[in-house]
Length: 129
Length: 373
Ligand SMILES: Nc1ncnc2c1ncn2[C@@H]1O[C@H](COP(=O)(O)OP(=O)(O)O)[C@@H](O)[C@H]1O
Ligand SMILES: [Mg+2]
Image (cartoon, rainbow over all chains, first blue to last red):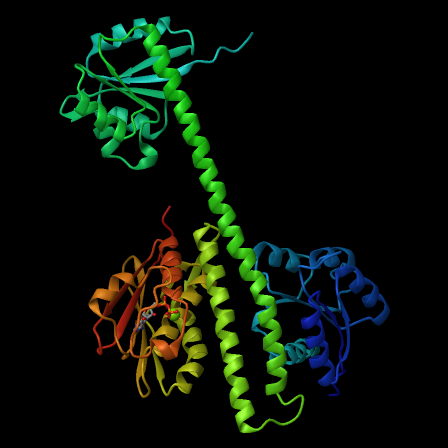
């Protein structure tokens, strides 16, 4: 079984974190792009057709929920895996994200670089089942 | 037809003549327009007041074997008459002072008031009630602002600490070259410090949420044997690093509790984490599940340093870090048990502790088995 290398889009407004995730994922060999808000993410997602999107919720211009509403994962992008990656563990927001088609919610603060890569691997492995 | 609105007043007095004469006066009060109702029994009055049946209460000082002031003393704050005017037979400064201290808005001597005095007294009492309600609302707003502040501040602290975690994590993972053992050791310390900070922030957020009444339990039938097996296996990794074992003794019959699984899971993570933190190497932590008639009881038993008797009562307070031989090294926020007790209480459960210095500690958690309606 040859595993396809996933294309990843990271949507994160904090510059330092955005850079960190990019460095980690690139060094693990994944084709990775990053956006700083939901609006940029919509544009990049259209251009690059990612397999996995790491999506922050609280962002300027267009937030994560706004991105999900416009991107319509359930109907328009059923094959794209969206991992909500936020430090705001507000039940209501998380529930809403799930309803809009997010696959998983991870508290950013709990994910070390190793865990970030594990999330990518797990997501791809689940996809093969 | 214009609606006529009345101020409803309840007179609590065991003497009917008193009602008739007061009612005559009340009828002459036009500002505000009032309707007087009468209740002669203490018990019935207590019931009505608890339901906030009227806009204002006039209560006789002597009510059979009770004093009208018992209606203030004997009942919970939200079941007291608000506002209320105390009536007495004779002017008595001591009673007056006592009545005002207990929250009466005014004090009238029977036979010594006319319609005008009544009108003034009603207006004053009602105005005071409104002012108090406003002050109360203001306090609630202040408190909400405080909760909101803690929540926003804590969330904001998470982001930079998450950044530190990534960059130190990358170094530790060897992404920028191999580390010398000393470099690695130093970075591990920085990483652990940062982890502690993240945990404290999480604890603060959990506590802020429960204090603000924002924890909404999603209760369901939960197999406690299974849940504890999962928690014990998760925690065994950390225990193993400390040279400790976790031994699970499940109940022999189904141990189904009516709880919010995720929340209760965190309670036991906390308790087992404590049991391990405050125990030395080569000890065992026992987790025992038992089924009682109305509850599932889970015991977390450790062979650790124990707790001094005088400290037992402080355990469940906020920020209650209690010094013991392992506490400096263990680290923590002193919020874990405070939070655990709060959410166990929300489940109508109970959390208890038995301990002796040097003799280990046992935490018992009682959780409801059935849904009581
Ligand atoms: N199993 C235990 N054995 C001994 N002491 C304990 C145990 N659990 C809790 N304590 C004491 O109670 C205090 C409060 O516990 P907790 O609220 O969990 O805060 P923390 O562990 O973060 O200090 C601890 O500081 C410790 O002194
Ligand atoms: Mg603790």
